[in-house]
Length: 195
Image (cartoon, rainbow, N blue to C red):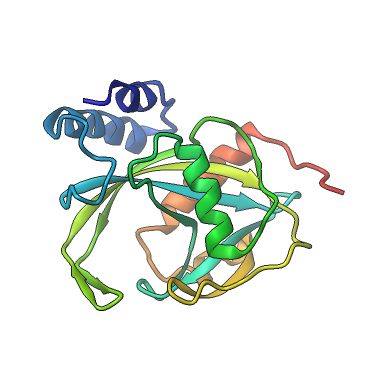
């Protein structure tokens, strides 16, 4: 087993009961799969890393309109064998939004979630239902940066005002997750001046 993965999860500070439960379940899955959760070869459950990107005033989040889920969503992706989950979240945010300058709020994850992924087709290939064992990192970025769509994954990228999040996100199960992350970040971090 990759002990460092377990150390990352064990060291995570839960924000509420959901994360306490998911952390225990994730540790159990690491033991069950002997740590083999870093690649999609584990088609039952595997690690993903997401980015919640905030505007400097922390009144907007950067999201992409996801082609598969037909909803505005955070940025991120599969860790695909990498050990630096923060670096994965940052790279995925850049690739999916076109944004270049991201400032991590912390080197540590701000959220931990076990997310069910329904069966779907991706690039013409069937993908069976499975679980994403997700860690989320928070970043600041300037609203002045150029954004770019990644057509194979999304059809729009934009800054969503926090007050419009519930209207824009059409995946109801994700709204509490986004709200939890927003609450934690507003509690733990201050707005910044990126000028």
